[in-house]
Image 1: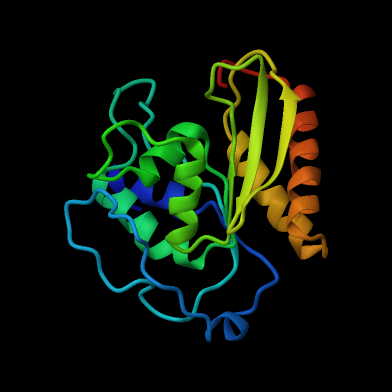
Image 2: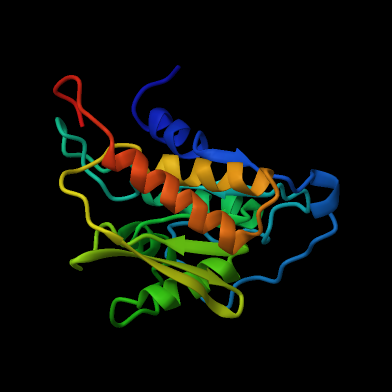
Length: 212
């Protein structure tokens, strides 16, 4: 396959896991455009692009993270715009960390940095049914993960902060949520069980070589 940006696109789209919602059930759903204007180099297209939304758990990947060797960003403005416009309207739940949530929800109209609650509200307006913002990148003694729905906060869970840095933890969490939903759990319970699974997997993890 192509290298460079194409690899980043694959890294983002490859983290989408289908859940129990069939395409025909979601085809009749219509969502109004968001009331906020996202930052973009291109004009917004109709929202969503079609009516065939498929339920998904989406982990947006490192939207503003440097590679260890090059120091380059792994996602351009165009890719972020495409994620907002094409993936969010098809997403049952998205699981960004706080940095990714702010990047996805930033607007030209912002004077100050938006709060995480505002970011979640904007992402839901963009088409996601639920938003789970993880607190791994916040300067708190414990990791606070908060699930938002259309009515606001659904649940908030605190987890002991583990030492070190873990590659793929967000992908594991999103995949675990999709698996719990496929097994019939409702969203709050699925999110709680998936967090528990992910935390214990990281707690027992080991590094066999020099990677993360």
